[in-house]
Amino acid sequence: MATDSTRTPSVSTLTPSTSPFFEQPQMLRRAVMWGLPVVLVLLFLVWPYQQWDYNSRESILIGWARWVSKRADWQFCLLVPFLVGWLVWLRRDELRRLPLQGTWHGLMPLFLGLFFYWVGYKANTGYPGFLAVQFVLAGLILLAAGTAWMRTLFFAWLFLFFTWPMQPLEDSLASPLRPRTAAMAAAVLNAVRVPAVNEGSALQSAPDADKGLQIGDVFSLDVDAKCSGINSLFALMMISALLGYLALKRPRSRFLLFVCAVPLAVAGNVVRLLLLVAGTKQFGADFAVGRHMGDHQEMSPYHTFAGFAVFGIALAGMFALCWLLEGREMKANLRRHGKPLAAGAVSAIPEPRRTLARLLAAIGLPLLVLGICAGTDISFHVAAPGVKLRPDDSRLPYLPLSLGDYQGREFDMTAEEKNLLDEGVRLARNIYASAAGRKLMATVILSGFEKRSLHRPEVCLPNQGWTVTDRTQIPLHLEDGREITIMMMRIFRDAEPQPGVKIRTRAINFYWYIGSDGTSCADHYEHVFLSYYDAVFRNIQHRWAMASIYVPLPEQRVGAEDPMQELDAAEDAREFLARLAPTFMLTKEEWLKEAQALEAAP
Image (cartoon, rainbow, N blue to C red):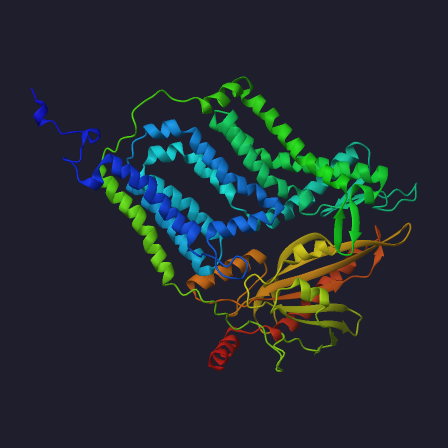
């Protein structure tokens, strides 16, 4: 029978006389509770990470808080860290019982997070830094505390993703939601015998020959990004995730509630449109929607009130769905989060030496990456542009004044464009007319020396009163043998020059982005991705240009448009672009010569 003298003492009985100072459970627990927060503060609160406003660099969290506080649609993100802290506090008793038993598997998310951290620092953009926060947190929890801690904190960690404003998703999700919202609103109106039609994101009253009404005479609305449901979607997804976690117990029920946030947000915006239609019919467009003040839409109080319908419908739908899923258990589910556990021992440290080694890795690796960042070249060396410049000293993009049977006239940048565009942006614009009467406007915009100087046409055009019907990427074969991809958009806007006469102006807009090194692409987000990818891995800081070709169609009365005019105009424009693009787009060989000349210049 073994005696007490032959037994190996447990961790909980280790004393300063039997264990090195830094392997004592109490000291290790303090090192974890103080050392890891210090690392997180250095990485994300202190270290100057990104130029958020083209000035000096600021840390991830300071720049994030200042950026979010200026944008009302994303201010709900400021609440998320406090909600995450509250979620962790709810599990405090359970966490106190869990042993600090880390695992080396935490190195994988930690390495991934630190890699994102360096990429965002090198490319001078915040979104990799947001991913870095998430993965570094997961890595530190696993490395220092273990899988049991990560399992307990998993929802709080996942909920932290709502902290970061996903602005790139705003436009990409809004574009497909806008026509679908208009189509659903038109279907509901027709079902209740209010004749309505929609084209793209436009929702208009149907023509009525018996009453002498043309299309849009009774009401005419355009579903902009705010009315598509996108502005409320992210906030509602956050609310649904939190409500599901607190009020529901089964993972399947939580997931179903979270997924339903999307159709509920769209349904709320359909109701919003129906309220705007009802208000327009009863009291007029100025009362229901607001007035146009130049290029700015001044929202009426009724329009603002209708916006609350989005959250009213969505929240009512969420609570109804919760009741259907686990109605009788909801109160018990809510009570279980605040119920303290029975008293028990404080968490133990079964493997103090390994815990110390993992703790040193959790602290040392981030500090090593900060050292690598300190030695990284972050100076912004803009490459030569991928378009030809005029031979004079204006440094404006080059456009020919004549091309085949097309003759052009120059038009300078307007005062309004100078105010809208960033400093350093250069613009060349010619209006061409052919002997056959075809007119086109070609514009080449060269970005400044600041990042993200170019804006998407899909964002600017609606502010100018245009409705984007659709957008399609099409191939374009240039006369010099190159093949590029360009974006084609069909747009229109209506005007009423006199009472009872509504005129529609239609147009086609082609555009694409031209980078350095012979790079070109049609999509805005592809050009953003290439900017950061080439900056990090090819050390090329693109100075982008955007080519835009505007092809107007003859004005016609609403409802009497000739579709053949659009097809003929698109074909003429593609033939013209095949000849025009090689006159201002540099080949890769030409760009290399320009880049060498730029480097050789004093």
